[in-house]
Length: 419
Ligand SMILES: Cc1ncc(COP(=O)(O)O)c(C=O)c1O
Image (tube, protein in one colour):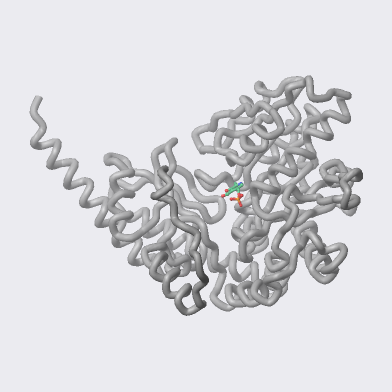
């Protein structure tokens, strides 16, 4: 980059109307979250709940959750209540505790740190011992990020044919320095829930910490279960599960940044809580990695959870489940389309039998959609929430067209190929 290519810091200020029109012009070609054209990134239950979250966020726009204990006890109380709701949802024992974080990555980071401290304390080892995490190949990169920071090794186990982790390989990968096992509920790429009951048995047998990464499913799978959709158990009912990450800003439908992290034992929260006593400004303490955090996200999460209540989340689950079924039946009718996995909750992953699915995705992109992709197997990936319902017919029709176009192009190039 040359100095002349940098954007200069404006010398004088501009008024709001001018700024707004400039920002609108800049984002004119960005995806509109409410239009349902992006496969990931945004989650909607219903327009009213969306407005409740937005209003609560704006109402508490300036509060800093770092100051919850000293300046904003009301925010602190909302934070505790949100975590209490999660503890109830995940069948946590009385001594369990939860914390509110800024997202899945932070929840995972804090869980990994707790597991490392617990392992070190139990085994009397320190920095000299290289510890490892054993997890599915589909587990989220946030574990690798955490591992880089904490100098850990990540060992990834492959999947069985149903795209869930192969527990027998997980077992083989464990050694004396394994500080954490991970299972996802569900995993991001394929939307399926790992065999957490078996992972829990393994964790108990080998006395290793098991983390359930329910960042995607935490606030939706329990409601799928409650409405009789039969999702596999992944929470504290499994004796080996020692921590659970569950993002509010995904299927909790609350504004970003908001996630929660739960520990079976309050002692584990103590392990990860950061305290610095010698700082000239006095004792500095946080249970999260971040310092300043938006109080707005806490207030908005509280408002959304209280607006929906259990009945509202069950209603949302029913709406989503019915929509997933409609998508599955619409997609199944497209010639050559194959499902890589049946969705356990709301993530679809499909490919093509006899043509290149990435070319189909290119076609969809050209029509204004923002598809998600997976590499193994080659597939298209979508996290469905209610903004995708009004877009469904158009999506299916565009996808059918794109399949047709790619098939036609493929058969033309096959017929003109020379040998
Ligand atoms: C299974 C899973 N875990 C963790 C994360 C990380 O969440 P975030 O992007 O909020 O940091 C994601 C994000 O999609 C995810 O799908």
